[in-house]
View (cartoon, helix red, strand yellow):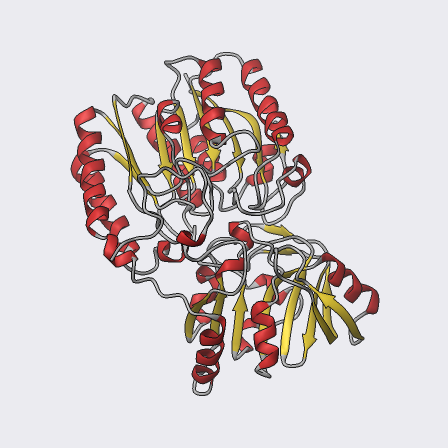
Length: 493
């Protein structure tokens, strides 16, 4: 008889230091990912997309499981989720689960770094409520983002947690497929679970798995899995979260407690030994970054990329800070491009003016305390409706909905402007408004690491820059009030 598996998801990566909260409408409205999907519409809504739930559904269907759809919802990273949004979405999911009748298992596609107005651990509380409905013996399997801040509650109220192993997250659907494979092949039986938290925070830019040391840790993780028989995960964490359990975690499920303990202890010790390596992460100031980029661009045959990591909307930033743009204009840079700049009013002004028009407006500077709009005059080079197919390893198969978009040329800089916050992790964001990112001498991307999936192959060199923004490159600069005293706010050399 086919396994009856309830499937659903609820995702938000919460920057506790960002001023704008995530409302119910933010989860309903599509952006980079689909809007809220409920019931049977979930299956078609995620099909073919690089999402964990899509991978799970495809693999579970291949193995002839009977899937009961709940809901799936995601909102762009921001400040905490409103209690109203959380309770409304959770109530919908739990109502569907309760009315589904007996199930053999539950699969949930969660992020692992959701904070609400009233809860530090949105996922742990959701899993507690799911467990209360299905009982102690029904397996609960969960996929988590690599940036999850994993808690004891998440571990205790689930049977198997599996986290992404790549940043940029090119393996999201793969992890969902792995969750289905492990659930069905093991029939959900894991007798051992282990969980450890590291005593230091890891900056987001140091978490990239395309380079060392992080690439090596995931190779080691797979080696340990093969030698112990455990399902092992490592989440470097999401630093801009003012909660007790912010930070890196290692966790495992296994046929025995000894196997789980051995797997977690081996990887934990390797990461403890590596702390000094993470302390060497280099981030440039705006002046350093622009000066170096100009010099490199003189002889480069491909773009020099400046990663505006602190204004990364994928980490809850406003995506409209003006620091790097001001520096480019002050330096009179020619043949540069910047994106994605979030300013719905500017995008609308460009649409009203039309292609070829010269317009003057106050651009950005509205979403981050201490910033201010930049008064510019530019030419509208292109406009778009913001609905386009994604490209690159993270976004192929997806359709993005970013609202009215425009390309505005200010002096020597082409600015891609959008009406929905979205980090440029696909070249399609630029190409939709007629900007060829490969043709720019200097390319500014409001992103920390995800851009590397589609942009690293076209870059001559990448420089990470700390312009003003809500996603602090150095976690030690964040004004934590709830972080546990036992964790160091930055790696020690």
